[in-house]
Image (cartoon, rainbow, N blue to C red):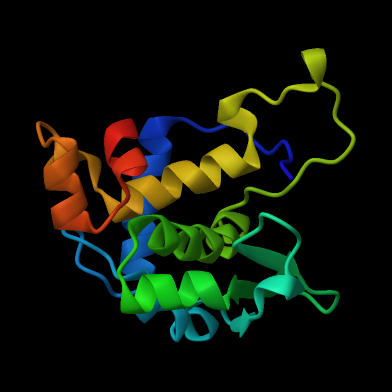
Length: 171
């Protein structure tokens, strides 16, 4: 599900990616291991935790999700299949799913809050105002910092950053 949020640009997303790396004590360049960030989320965010759940506990075709909690904060839920695929087989798409869910609370803290009941032409949210686009863009920028990926092909991106072919191709 997607929601409208405040508008942003790709340039701003790149700055947020740098802020994310700083918040987690990561180098500003190079690959990121999303699994190593899971145990840091509660320390960095304060009110975010994660759990590995059976696939049946998530809606159909949802590999992971970030659920707002009634008392505030978030719970990141990751299916066992995705966690094990990222951990044991280093599957790029699964790694991205995990980082994507870690990015949701970060986007929230950066002021990207859902705007409810806002009508758009054809009920489509423009990408620059889409909460999911913001989180996906931040995920891509954290996993593959733009400046250091210029000129790399898909195979080089996959090998260097541990991303899927689709993510590498999109970059």
